[in-house]
Length: 352
Image 1: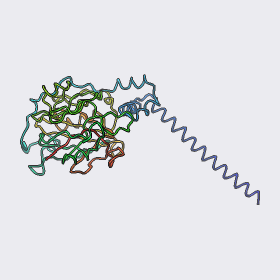
Image 2: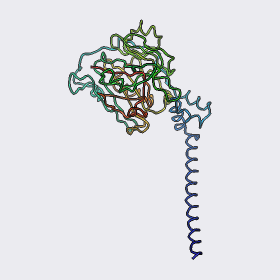
Image 3: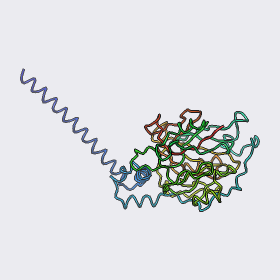
Image 4: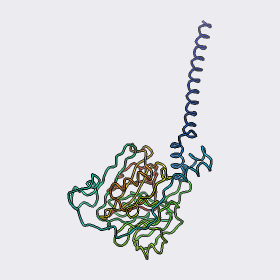
């Protein structure tokens, strides 16, 4: 009897050892494969990891634990956005009162201009590509686009949905960035200058992400300008604006994106305007939410070009990206706050 028990214990021990050896072998294979991808001859994985991590405030360690600073600097130097060295020419925007006709240059023109009802304020267009998905909102009256801010700017941020509610807005997306050294920021401290109703209501150091002032002038033209806050008011006559970037398209000319632009792949938000005055809000999901990996500056620019943007700029992305329509969260935000939304200082809103 004792011999039978001994044999059973021996058999169990052998099986345990086999399982251990199998798991150990799989671990070694996984580590080897990871090392090959990170340090091997193909740079794509290395570059995507570094550029994606280094444009966040809280996840840069994902790059720094694997690579030294020289490698990170080299990758970032080979992946960047070289912006068009111009400011917006407002004369390129000719606001129109309604539909321009029934002949369209492309399906994208049809998507924008073909309304369900002639008096519609906006239209939502689904973006559905292989690796990224999101929403484009065409706002037909640019005078309805305003800047919304948290009601406690400098003290506490608010989610895009709360900012929309406070302003009875039909549509809202996140706007500029904010000071966030440890990801625990409450979104109160907006980066750069904030202009609302033709007044400077906030001024802080800019985010150093390229671009400059992004906002609407008194003629409801979206202006992209590298300038100081005084010229923003007195020369460009901005009524509502924030500072952020990079600029994606200026006067119909797309910025040159080297590599992936240095921003990696993530959720994105952008704002643009067509030559006919129609304003474009773009939000792309990412990090696997909504079945979307996310996109980089190349894809973001291409989408805006596709839909006819003459001027377009990147807004804060990542866990800040959010789209609200009639108090409903339309996209798939990735933060842990109000149904995935983060607290923010500013939002672009559309009011009736």
